[in-house]
Length: 585
Image 1 (tube, rainbow, N blue to C red):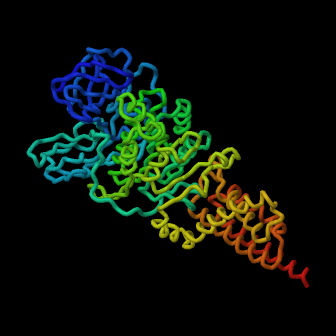
Image 2 (cartoon, rainbow, N blue to C red):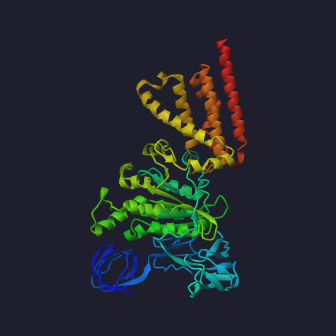
Image 3 (cartoon, rainbow, N blue to C red):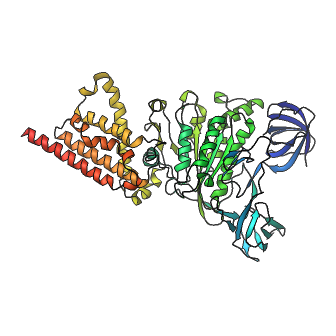
C-alpha cells in the first residue's frame, strides 16, 4: 500500500508528498477519518488528490494511504428503490431520508436467489448464473463479473441470501478459485464491456407528443434538454422518468437544489408505475448530489449513474438515465480545475470539458450483452445555460455528442405553455430508425405528417412577423389559414399538461389518431378556402373547439371517439362548403 503526507490543502483538493508509487485514478484514504479521495495528478514525489467528502479538520502532516484500486461502486440488487449519494453510498431507503446520525449500510437485506447453473458448467464473463425474484422490485439477474470466466465448482441451493453472500465458486481459467456473489464492484470511469454495439431500433417512448411525434429519441440514444431558469427542465425530466417505457430509471440530481430533490423524494414513492400498477420506486434508482454536497462528488456522480445504468443494461433491460443538470457538473469541473491551477479555456471551463462530456454521453448504447441478451442505455441530460444562451460552451459541446436536442424556450414557459420545447430550435437525428415503429402503430405516413407540422410552425413564425406590421386581417386567406392550422398544432397537439389525469401521458395509438385528425382538418380547410370559404367561418365551427380539447376530452380508453370526431369534422366541412355553394348560386 502506498503512503503519503499532506502538505497543502484547498477545499476538496490537496497535495501530498510520497516516496512510494501512486497511480492516476487510484482511490486513497485521506486523514485519520479515512476520507475517500482519488489521485488526479502525479508530479514526481507529489500527488494531487481530490477528496469526495468534507475536508474540514484536515491539516498538513495528516496521512494519505493508497488503496491500489480505482474509484469503484458496488452493483447489486439493493440498488433498485433506493437513493444514494454521488458515490453510491446509501442516503435513504424506499424514498425516505436517513435519520440524522444514522449509518446506512448495504448487504443486510436478504434476497430470494434461484440458481440457473450447475456444478461443472463452463461460464463466460457476463454470464447469468441465477435470478432474484423480489416482491418489492423488478426481478433481476445475477451476473458473473466481466473479466471472470471458468468452471463452476459449487453453487448454493435456492434460498434467501444477502447480496455479499458467496453463491458460486468458480475455478477461473487462470487456475485461481473465486467466490461470486449477487453484487460486484466496478470502476465508474471504465465502461462495462459488451459483445457488440447494435444499430438503434425503436423509440424510448415517453408519452409526450412533442417528443415522440416530432423529436423522438431512439432507444439507446442520447438527448440534451437545454433551457434557462424556470423553463421546466426538472419537471419534464421527472415526467419522462414517470412515463417513459424503460425497464429501469436512473435519476441523478447533479448539483440540484436540496428542495427540488426533497420534492422528488416525496413524490416518487407515491407514484404508481403505469405499466405494472405497483410503486414507481420499484424500478427507480435516485442518485442525489445536492449543491451543498462536496463538489468533487458532484463531478463523479454522473459516472456513478452511468455505471449503474450499464449494470442493468447488461441484464438485458432498457434503461433511461436522467441527468439534471450537466451544467452544474461542468461547474464542478471548472471549480476543481481552478484549484489545480490549470489554464482556463472558454468561459473559464477546463480545456478537457468536451472530452469529459464525450466520455459520459458515448456510454449510451443499444448493445448485445456478454450473455447474448439485447439491452440499451439511453441518456437524457439537462443543460442550464446562463441567461438561456445556447452558444455557451456546455451547450455547444453537448450538441456534438447528442442526436436529439430539445430546446426549452423561456417565452413559452412564461406563457404557461408546457412542455416548453421550442419546435423550431429543436431537432432529432433518430428519425431514420423509427419509421417501422410508427408503421406498426398504424401510421405509415408519420414522417410526412411530422414534416408537415414543422413546416406549418416555421411558416407561422414568418407570417407572425409580417402580421405584426400589416395585421392578420390584411393577409391573404391562405396565409390566415396557415396561422389557424399552426395554432391548432400548438394548442391541440403540442401543449400537454404533466398534471392532467387524462393527458399527462399519450400512447402511440392516441398520438397517431390526433395527428391523422389534424392532417385531415388541414386538407378539408385547404379545400374549403380554395372554394372561397372564409377562414373566420372555419375558425368559428363548433367542431374546432372539440379539436382544441381532444387531448383532455378523449382518453386512452376512448380511442373510438376519434372516429366520431373525424366524422363530425367531415360533416361540418360538407355543410360549410355546401352552404357556400348555395350562396354562390
